[in-house]
Length: 566
Picture 1 (cartoon, rainbow, N blue to C red):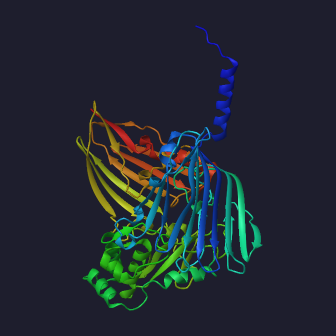
Picture 2 (cartoon, rainbow, N blue to C red):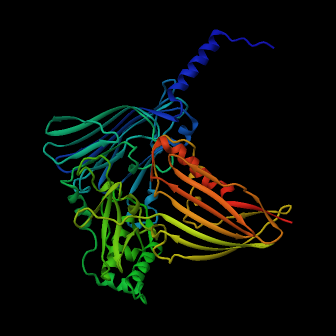
Picture 3 (cartoon, rainbow, N blue to C red):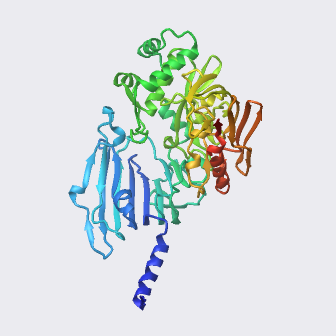
């Protein structure tokens, strides 16, 4: 059987390879992307967005870019779609029909009646096919007085690469404007015309945002634009602080006393209030930007039994202060290399710092554990909303130390675990169990049985680090650097023999170290396991070493022993 390859076949193959090389690894590509923000002299604002996006895969066409979602407040904002159409591969223009512009309630506003006036415009792109290019251009105009200031925090990488990316910010000449394009830094082109000052950047060949898990601004590896027209960061946080409950309120005091009835210590009262806000209120995911940087009064939040993150943070500190438990709302800002005062409220994460019975608590309205600020304090800036002064947070420890006594018989394995777990890893509302007992069945297969070595839920083995890819194209910042050690003592009765493992295992690399050792004396077997990661920041070059370390720690061979019963 003979195959003939003619010149046309070679040309087609050559064109396919060339085309594939252009967009290899990307589902789509932005030919052009433009975002501009304008603060007008009358205080109104405009956001202008324009894109040309070429689709390369069915995934891009059917799920990633089949629709565009734009959330706005029609009471104060006007959305104008200047152009929306698709140019197919052969040049045919398919305009977006009127029935492809659908107004719906934003998902984030569901179950939040006070915000059901918000609107999400869903633009369904039509005429899509492989090689088609979507053209979309719209302007969102905000009335004067609705948004307190120009407030920008924009991640530069998109889900797909961008050939040409234009960014610009315009404000009246002489107005306050702090800005920066960082990680890496890029200089802006500044111009003045018709009484307006404009700063602009033109970026070329911007790589796509990494799909690696746990990507955020705190890793120092994601480029972003930050800008603010507030006079200072203090002015920004003051505007939010002034909306919070800081006066003596009888309804708030009455509720706080009811929730903490029977509690005699400040710690007990704090735990009761945190549990109440966590569990008895609906938590709306609406951001401050979506609510126009406005918050409802705490009494309205109480009566409605739901709130946004900012509203429930206000309620949490209000209930604590009503009982004279010192509490203040703080904000966490990415530190990195951004210019001073370039962060507005869009870049802030809120939490409550409280002190009860001499212990400092970092409270999150949606969690019973320490707020992430405790882990981020050494990489970010934490300020008090009341004073805009830096707040010193206690160093967070992540150590876990456990000893486990295990008794094995022919049918069961009984384990008594004594744990010393860092407070930062434990619930604020539940007392840490220093000793726990568990009984598991011993399952025999042809006389062999696997005895698993238990560890607490706070341990690194419960994380999915080992399931991630073996390489990573960006830095990784862990919540904390694991530091764990376990000692197991197993009583092995007569007639039972240890089969595996027979040797220990040690791994030391650029990310840290782990070890597994065992020693049998008579009918007692002692197993020791330890894990130490050097730093929360895992640089891209060290990530393969980190993955190897996590894979070794999660390996069943280092988490169990196999015995044989005669």
